[in-house]
Every structure is written in structure tokens, then in C-alpha cells.
Image (cartoon, rainbow, N blue to C red; front, side, top):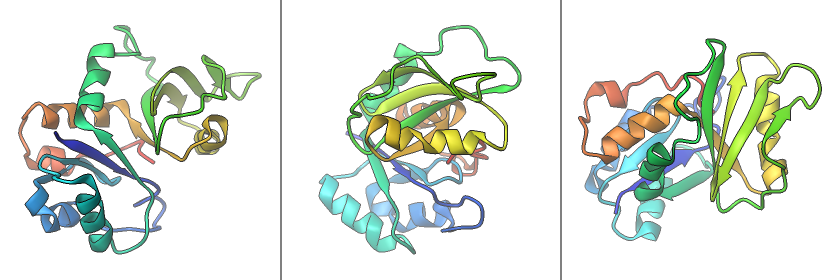
Length: 189
């Protein structure tokens, strides 16, 4: 079964930078496909999870928090599609936050942040280790996304819905062209 790996807080603001495509190539024995620039990988031949995780950590140029999901759980996100069929407003980006484990769902959903005035982050659904939402591009948005760890009692990393859809295409056996390996990853944290 394929795994999907999300690294937290890499290639953001010039900190903990590396080239994900080079890391993927160095893990070719596991058939790793890089998706974007934010440390997102599909591992098509992971073997034993502990062995793969050890190899990944040995190849990373720094310590990083790693979130791992079964590929089937990610593929199911598209069929469950929590955003419905209506396209988002032009100023809204849809996202999925992936937690290090099952969340303790302390936050009521739906939830808007800030709680008063115009929202910058809106959480719309939660399922296992995933929380789904939308955000508006604003200087304060990253701070609200950073509060998710505390709200849900587990470490999280956030990816744009477009990145999740790219992961699903790779899981379905789609092309592993440079388009997937070098996608912008815009909105990923």
C-alpha cells in the first residue's frame, strides 16, 4: 500500500530549505514521487513503515516533523469531497490540514477565525487526521493556521486542495512527470 508523507515547516521563508526532488531521487528504492516544493511525497513501495521512515530521516538535511498517511485515506478524500461542488470565491483557497495522528477534536466545527468580523480561516469538516477548510490570503492567515495544533491537540501541516488532488492523481497511477515533481505548492505550509 502506498504512503503519503508530509513534512512540516520546510522550504518556508528561507528556513529548513532543501530540494524535495533530490530527496525523492535519493529514496528511489521506495519509488518516491515528489509533489510540489513543500515536502510532500507519495511513496509507492514503502515496505515496512519504520524502515522507510528511518531512511527518510537519514536523508533529510535537518530534523523535521513527519506526517504519514495511508494512500487509501488520501484517495478517499476526493470521493468524500468535503467542499461540495460549488467552486470557491476567487479570494478563497481550500486546504487540508494533516495531523500527526487522530485529532482530539477540541474545536467545534464549523469554526471561523477570527471569531468576530470577517473570517480569514474557516474550518468546515474533520475526519480522522484531516481537517478541511478555506482561507483568505492575508498577513494574519498563517497565524490562524498555526493555532490548529492547539485547537486539535496534535501537530499539523497544511496543504492546498490542489496539492491533495495532485497526490490523488499520482496514487491513481497518473504521470510522474515534472509537472507533479515541480508543482508550485502555493499555499502549502
